[in-house]
Image 1 (tube, rainbow, N blue to C red):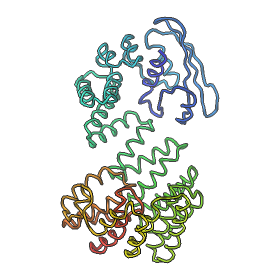
Image 2: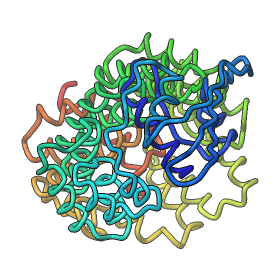
Image 3: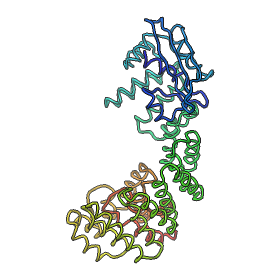
Length: 456
């Protein structure tokens, strides 16, 4: 009954403007959600003759706003409890107590059999099948639910459509369902965050920026949307707006804000500014990302035109990694030397990294390694490699796509698709980004080469 009661109150408030209701197990969970109000409820009695006591607390002021004692049949008392929060709360669409009991006991399929238009129960049953690994059964159940023209509620129908799109790996349908759901439940920060992330990953940067800005305004106690907003604004071509968002983010996580400021300036090719931000991040917290601030600062200084000065910063990075007993230290030094045009020194340094030396030398020599688009690229099967890298690129978030973006552009350029390649070279690649480690040393040199050859 406890589970059903709180779920019904939350469902009644779903879609109410300016209200996002979530069921929590404890006050600790409420604080973690940055909740502003909490509905406390208890009940006494037997069977359907229950008496409810409801207290509404304002957490921001730590004050009880109102209390009520409610007696009503079925879900009427719970609907009244929801109206204590907002008079616009809608009544729960079902009063079948047996179906509600089955739903409360996590027997969602029985709940559906007792109340065939019970959208929330259908959704729970679909999720339970998917959690057991039965994707086909979950998708079949979703189709059955969506086939009911009387399925309630509209929010639950769209949630089921979203679940079905996810099960089919249909990104366009998933994004469409999220857009419709965000209009039906406008105050849900979790939903808005998901939609913003989907738009960012789909590289709809202006849309993503608008959503992250809304999320920041909706949930001002959470700094993460400001960080994401900074990257979305940069990719949308608004460096000043990106800088402003990340400066605001400093109030939440200063070290990460400095690192993000460094990255957006690096991506934009403003290396002097990027270097200073990376060094500030390292000064604030040397352990942040294993000293990566020094590595990125060294690259920024080198691309700014001073290799000896960059070597000095990189040596600070090497010393820091040595203090961590890094087993790949010699390989990291070799990567730096190769990237900055000193292949002979890089090969000499690889002798201290026998675990990776042979494979790394093979890549430098253009000898295919492994399988997939990386091997096809070295085999000079550029058209096939481009198709493989396209799939990886489209499934990689923009903040982690530096390596695959350059390799994809390389494949496209060699395959004669030069305009497509140019479009991928707008932003500089971040050093040490995700991808195949053996290709790391090729990325910035290849980026420079492609920009020159393609005239960007």
